[in-house]
Length: 150
Image 1 (spheres, rainbow, N blue to C red):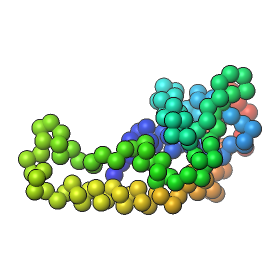
Image 2: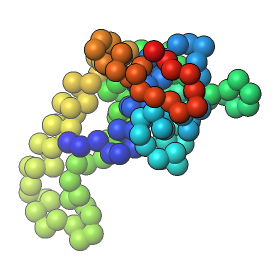
Image 3: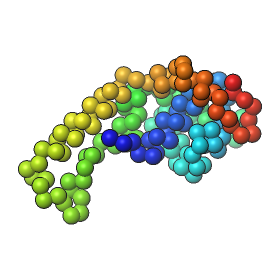
Image 4: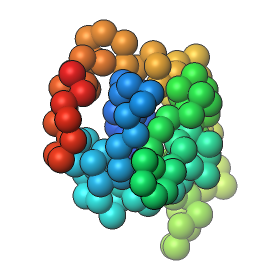
């Protein structure tokens, strides 16, 4: 299974935010640059992460992004499920529909594999992803126009 680009970006943003000091709230543009993704993509993903309660975004002077407690310690499996959706891995009902769909066992096997993938992520949190040696690497990522985080 391959994650969508949006989920990949969301996880990068969450990991980046997880290693910053609590008093440091970077802008969406700063985070986009730090994780090397286009600003427009990052803005859409941040909006989705806000909706899921993973990221808090404050506007105006002194504003910026922060990872919420739920984003920091919530199940990674839940976050990825929400971002990816739980649709079928294959397009049995696409147009035109697969002629084998009524007697095929592939769809069920792939659904089980997909759930096993998510279940592997269930006990993990964003905090689990940013412990050493990952955290120091993430801290070393430059954020243009901001003081060094590490």
